[in-house]
Image (tube, rainbow, N blue to C red; front, side, top):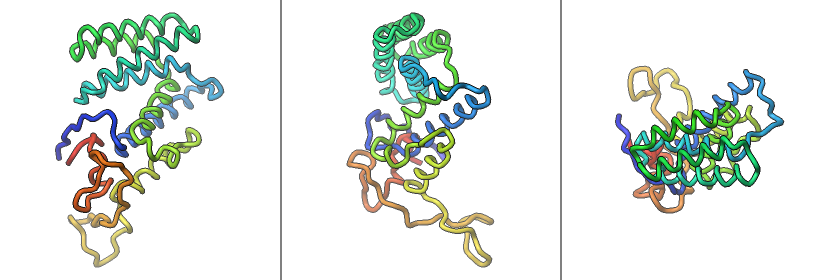
Length: 223
């Protein structure tokens, strides 16, 4: 199976992308716990913005070109936030350096910008966790209130809530005598919840639902 890149930064919602970022947030939360990071000290906003820029530049390398200038915007916000809150000067310099590289060289400067951000920000797992959570919210804004995790331990619950609502899932295990799509594999359930997406690539066409279109963004990819 191949995935077709559908490069749309602002969409009605991409459940698959939200699951991707929540899963990344879960991995960083587990790492933060293992390292005994203090949950009472949230990461600085400027550092989270830098981390989000880093994540989105990685998306550019995958093929989502529109994320380039979104990342530049995040870098500008990080610079402003660092100046406003008197964050360490390194964050201001890092954001500015990476932004200028991208403004000058565009797509060809992405890897150098990512290197500058990584070396200057020195992200900890708590920073990356917060950044991926924000990206998950951006990818599925309509449903955020319903699925947002209350704490780190609830990431799995949030992921499963999204999967149950948006994805095709088997209704039951295969009993003796039931048919399967392949030897040893149960047929997937066909009755899935319809989309709450508003227009755009998530709109239903001819009976397709948000699970199948879901929001054709890599996630966003059409199979």
